[in-house]
Amino acid sequence: MPHQALNLTFPFSHTPFGYKYVWIFFLLMGLTNSYLGWRSLLTHLKDNEALKSKYRLLFIQYAIWSNLPWMVMGAGILLGKVNGVLDYLVPSQGNLAVVIWWALFFLMNFIITGWIFFGGGAEKLEKYPGLPTMLSGSAAHIRIVTSIGFILVNLLAVIIYFFNPWAHDGQAYSIRVLLDFPFFFSLFFILFWLLGGWLFGLFSGWVSLAQYYVTKKKYDEPLLRWRSAKFNWVHYHTCLNFGANQAGFYISMNYFFKIHHPNLFIPWSDIQTVKGEMIWGPTFILHFEKAPKVSLEIHEKTMVLLKEMANNPAAFKGVGD
Image (cartoon, rainbow, N blue to C red; front, side, top):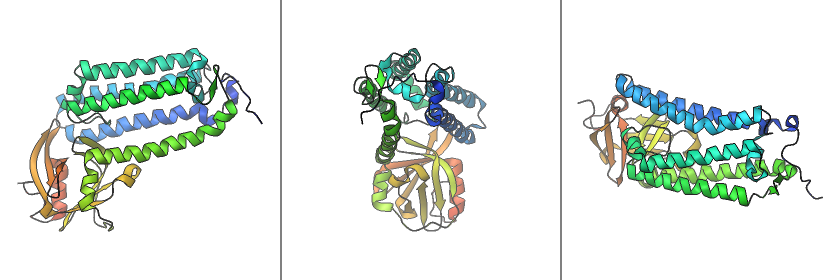
């Protein structure tokens, strides 16, 4: 039986609840991510009001830019100009609200890329690390990641506009969208989970550490949970667990990307500790004997707690001295 071709502007009340309000979920995710990142930084910035004000401005700008597309999308839906998020998959239909959303999307994409490359954005993000994004590390790394993201985002937009499998002459096969969307969304989510986690693990050096220090033994001793640290140039925000005992240093990842980040246990004899400095305060940088190209930078306050937990003079030499 052929699919019935319906324009996406069928009555607003007939739109399935999930497709009508799913933008709220993404908006809340963005706001929560911003809040958790800010709360994590506050533990390091609470004694520095001048630095706190600079970071507050950065986080406000980040929260606005990262959530503006979802707010505009929600406004179009709540005002009845768009039925649900599925309308935004068919920009070729000419719906004014959808066109405005895509115009905003491209404008933001070009503005951010231009700021990174020509407005000193890469240098600013290097100087003030800590935003919950992949744009961290050196200015050169930030430009590389921005370039890759810019290409992929615009390629995806071209595919959606010109090769949308659900669109035909400005219309969409509504029944096909309703049946296929959960499958394709799930497929995208799984691919992002697998590929994204692997890329994080590869660039951060976690994969290299796992070659020598992976452990499958359950760690039953106390942990410092929901901690932040920087592996090479990749920042892990409020998603790490640290433990320390007489034998060594334990590291694990929380939940989402754990499949690509196996638990690690590193003996004290393989760890060298040197002092470092981030903009929000003193840090310690760990180097590992069997993976010399990997570095792990942790805030001093966290390191002091870990050394107390280890109760071993060989643990984190130089910390607390």
